Image (cartoon, rainbow, N blue to C red; front, side, top):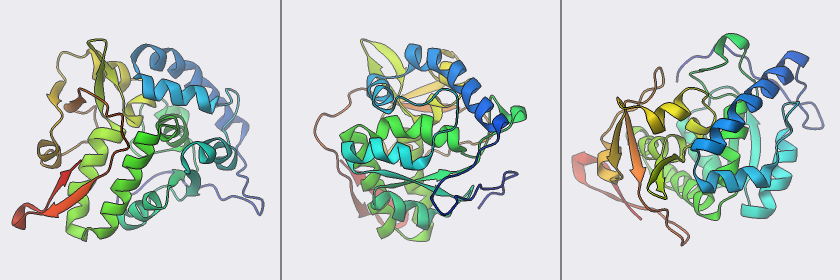
Length: 250
């Protein structure tokens, strides 16, 4: 597991996390910067979820208040965790419709780009998509598959999550739109993923995705474009393919 320079914030006996005034100011400024970007570049499933969430603009929201909005819609809750957790716990939480949220928020030095997920990424980036029954079911299915996978297969499975939920693209009205949560919460990578001529955009293909390494230190060299978002509730089944590991069927 990678190391982080940030320390987790611990909830009090009521489940409330105290955020300093500077923490709230960072949230405020990130929201102010990102809202015009997501309105311009994000796909409709994300924007519809954003309308449901109606985030506070002047302070870091508490996980409990986010769960109160999210749970009646899709059965998901948001649970504060340490800055980084292992794949086994991550998949187990997803399987139980619990989204793990790192409790700290980035500092000004990392304002435009942070390697590890912070509370802004977790809440602003992920919870709007979890309002959508299709993406809520897909995320749970990833978790269930992860619980069945072996340790060596985690890396393959997380690529599917990375190139869809985190950094997926789609097409709306013949235009590329950002779908992934990692894009929605990134001030620089959101417009880059849609507009950059140097970024490689490939057609969505599960086998290609599972064979493609991802980067956490730079903007993604490769994105996958989901040409059509399915309208039925998605599911994932995995089968073993010898030394090739896992393949997925939707």
